[in-house]
Amino acid sequence: MTAIETAPLAIHKGAEELPWVEIGDGNKLKVIMVDEGQGLWIVENIFQSGFDVLTHKHTGPVYGYTMSGAWKYKEYDYVNRAGSFLFEPAGSVHTLTCIENDTQVWFQMYGCNLNLDADGNIDSITDGAGTLAAYYALCEAQGLPRPNVVVR
Amino acid sequence: MTAIETAPLAIHKGAEELPWVEIGDGNKLKVIMVDEGQGLWIVENIFQSGFDVLTHKHTGPVYGYTMSGAWKYKEYDYVNRAGSFLFEPAGSVHTLTCIENDTQVWFQMYGCNLNLDADGNIDSITDGAGTLAAYYALCEAQGLPRPNVVVR
Amino acid sequence: MTAIETAPLAIHKGAEELPWVEIGDGNKLKVIMVDEGQGLWIVENIFQSGFDVLTHKHTGPVYGYTMSGAWKYKEYDYVNRAGSFLFEPAGSVHTLTCIENDTQVWFQMYGCNLNLDADGNIDSITDGAGTLAAYYALCEAQGLPRPNVVVR
Amino acid sequence: MTAIETAPLAIHKGAEELPWVEIGDGNKLKVIMVDEGQGLWIVENIFQSGFDVLTHKHTGPVYGYTMSGAWKYKEYDYVNRAGSFLFEPAGSVHTLTCIENDTQVWFQMYGCNLNLDADGNIDSITDGAGTLAAYYALCEAQGLPRPNVVVR
Image (cartoon, rainbow over all chains, first blue to last red; front, side, top):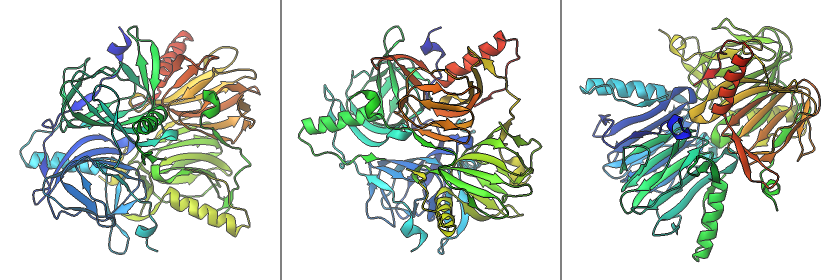
């Protein structure tokens, strides 16, 4: 066999391959890949205008790729729009708010979100393992078969 | 100062912030982020139909996010279209070919491309440091100021 | 210039180069490298018999290399001794206890420690940025010059 | 079940758990962990005085932890001894030479070694998948059972 035949395969997830689940008010979540041991989780979201994410601090780096719409962090002025790239270093803290309907974003995340209360104390955490479990449960609750997420 | 005020900042690159450089036949490149010591490089490409990339093997993982158009690896059947996610594990080998004009893709890459000849021997390599140098040189050749790539 | 002359340099920290700071009861800490944006922190410890670390959950992977002595996690039977390697995947939870005096261990850590109380709630966190700040402060308090930690 | 009971387990490899294989002239190799998709490989070596490794360039970062003995890169003056830490950024190029017998070192490596000839051209590569295959083959040739390497 040649090197190409024995090499590990690339894994493709087309836009329609994994279902969107509703997370309230028309906002949607898709979990694409989780490598729990590495602390890696890749999700895609569709946010509607006015949607807020809890203020959180990242324990690893995050890379954001925006497909459509507009969203920002309340702490910064710039707006993520179609074609925006965002690098969030580990330790960064911010509060996501969505500005336009049908804002679609991929987040490639390492580590977890430490969700902070108004005094900066940790209120809860959000991580890949928990988000994957929630995604599976929401799929089941919405009558969908268990999605074929890339799990390492 | 509060934790939020002292935290490292997220870095945003809007769609218009970094210039596209021409790499031949209407194909374009933008280098967004390079952390040379970590072996990380993030680029965005616009490919035209018929564009081929040399067969290559990756020494680290690659994550591909497609904005528009259509492209595939000659070795596989699936086609990357708008909204496609692709995970290419370290060690994977493939030959990119573009199917539709104005195909736009982000690649978040670790390590380098080992470019292979028809016998599977290493012909050359492509890496983040070299691609960044080429991007700076192409910007200069095209009369553009030095772009503000995210460099760690 | 040749490729070798322009390549980035490797960075060496000899055993005597960075000082040990006392963290109580003869236990010692040395911070060797911190890449805050990547969430990476590399420390070395000398623990004395009976030293316990708070039960914690990791948000990224940890790699442990033991030079001398003996230590274990209360949750597991195996004992880390000279020459032991330990892989702690992200999400793992455990309580370190030291068994022999002068146990010396390197930890290469990604993400943070979520320190848990008896009910499994997050009581506090320990991360690279905070540990580096503590190391600098302890050096100063012990009359040592600011150590030349590898900081990216 | 509690969070601790469902958490992923840490994996320990004691000093005696994985066999050393002879790689010539009393030099020895042990492969401890390989995550091929991530490009991660962790090995331990025992080198004898006078042992040289081919000049190579790394495509990812490398972290070296020295247990005993003495070794250096011909390009640099410093010597790695017991307790030394070494950070080799991606892109670094060097030629290892061993100075004292029974020099024992762990290397946590990402990506591959591009082995260079005297003109700086790539002569061959060494990577995690190939090194693991060689380790298995050498164990078999030396009449040892297949070692239980941490493979993800």
